Length: 278
Image 1 (tube, rainbow, N blue to C red):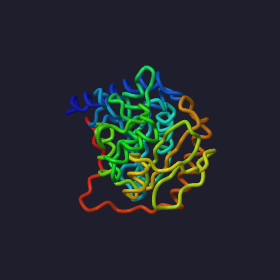
Image 2 (cartoon, rainbow, N blue to C red; image 1 turned 90 degrees about the horizontal axis):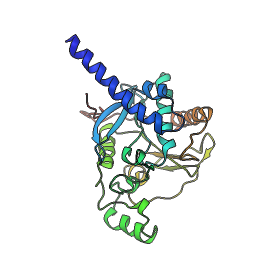
Image 3 (cartoon, rainbow, N blue to C red; image 1 turned 120 degrees about the vertical axis):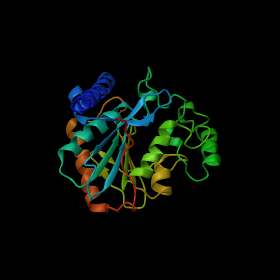
Image 4 (cartoon, helix red, strand yellow; image 1 turned 90 degrees about the vertical axis):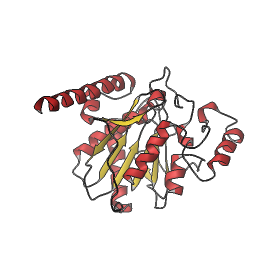
């Protein structure tokens, strides 16, 4: 039994070291120690090219809010994945009843492309692939008439056509978050969708709601499902804010959460465990 446990521990360290070597070489403002201390776990999900999508649950058992944080939905927004890793450290350091679930790099194929790409390996913009009402008509119409068939914004052939969006959709159903935080770049604003009063600022980012798009996470989660979605648009895709500013944004988010959101109990029999592999 001890031998089996030791093998599992060693295997877990090997997985963590491998992904952190990749992240450390690719991401801005990410030291190897920051990534290894995050203790990322391999989910059961894989990208189009078979890359693992990693998750991290912090304070997984509590009576507070359930917060889902997503980085790297667009693979060329490297700072968003870095920011998620920094916030894992801040969540680990605080004593809280809140339950945090982090998905630092939802689109690993886009992230590790050379050069990095906004879209996934099928050429789909994951932030246009969620099943908003009338997706079949509106997503295609918007792509053709508003973006003039911009390949960086192709919504895909159908909603949830991609393994990455299927995974996030399933995690939202499992975890039932009271809040979703989606980190992007590089517009330098704060966006919000949902049924409660939005935060007016996080650090140096001020609220500037940019609109609702067919198939976007904000539209699906915030408007359609009633889960508040805070969308952070960092000022640079290649550089993170300073460490001081990252902490300031975290503090502002936490303060807004405490003043604006109320925990809700999961339904009886609800399974909120992240789907990870041993």
